[in-house]
Length: 416
Length: 222
Image (tube, rainbow over all chains, first blue to last red):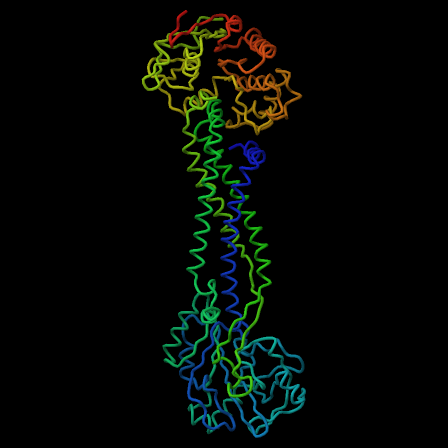
């Protein structure tokens, strides 16, 4: 293959080069963009759980509390017993594990959503450590409280004050702004989980609806090893039974209802169609070009180029042409990704994951996590697309030039 | 001139379907000889040149070129043989339009493993001999017919061939330019001892050769 000859052919046969290169570029751009969009929706679906440091959250549905006084459980998050927690914790494929306890507290003067958490565990609401606006985070073994910023503002609570929950007073260690973080497992007041476990275990209203032991929980947070999320979700459902509510990125993806989100098959089929159409266009363009160049190929053979010399040259041309098409396609898809990056996506949070009682004003409103679509093109996708472009060039060029290289120079020159 | 034939054809035949274009041609050519093949259009002279140069396979007979019988050679063996042994000059120049003059001259050497600079220098030297060095970087589209043919002659010589085959080398040129091209070919024969087989329908041009072979209806008649 002679590089000088190759580059001059591409440079001085602009129409031919542009047709093949642009056809391929459009196909590759569609392929990359569709896949980037699909990955973006997948990534977006991970966000609500990622914000709470988990890949999976687990709750169990139960009965509606009959008496709304003191601490009660939401019907969407009743007891998960200690032995069940331990069974789940021991499942293979778990990288990190956290638990929490969500309680609604109906005191005489106010309603409070209380979340008991493990302050030192980054899997679960412990991740809120990063969203403190004043004071300090909870410390294990200390009966102190964190107050959510908007709740603190409503009731004029500051760090150093104290809050009373279900008859027990806690000093306020700090203020946290959870609204900037998660949409799930948020509360008005955060306490160490042991405090809330004591509170729930001693509540007649809780025990009446869902018997609760002092080491039980009602929300679990799981960080899974790569590729283990779905298998873990199935195992957890097996342990907790039919009333288990297991949220995963896939369950959020389903709620998005978008074609890209709904089906990997859609992405695959669309990508395949884009590639097949592109290959056909490239083949047609190249076949036309080679037919036009039959005379030139005859000259090459007449002056001593062998079949393999001719094939090597033509394959080199088509590979380079398709490589340029791939690069251009990548640039086009980067522009498309940039434009799509302005798109906002609303991820619906399931009602059962909303901590607010639905019977309170605004409690039944749908909750969405709104974010700009995280469209970006991974280097793997880019590399795949460029490699695919070159492969198309190699296969198309190889197939076509193998045929035309068999042309006899005398046949071509006789017609000159 | 010595007595060893550089080119020998024995009972050469060529048919396209039922049409017999070359009939029983037997022909020898000595090293350093300049031979013209003349004949009317359709007499089979270009087909004979294609057979003798290894561009075309005969339907029957034998051809020995530079001591090698090429009749049974494969396509690739013939290509290599042409690259190493033969130079071609065509009526319509047959230059590659995207390549510059010097690159067209170097075209037969592109598949040969050698330093690119050596290849370029060799091509430029031949263009200098053709008084075309000032047009070395021009593409064929910017050259006149005579200039194109001089580039084509340089290309025919770049591989130091044992024999040059020229098919109507002045056929697409005006008479003045044609004479100039013939002068170059005669000079190559006279000064360099180049063996040359030229096909032409012009008897005046054929007169420049050492020997004239006349063809009619596919047969050598004299």
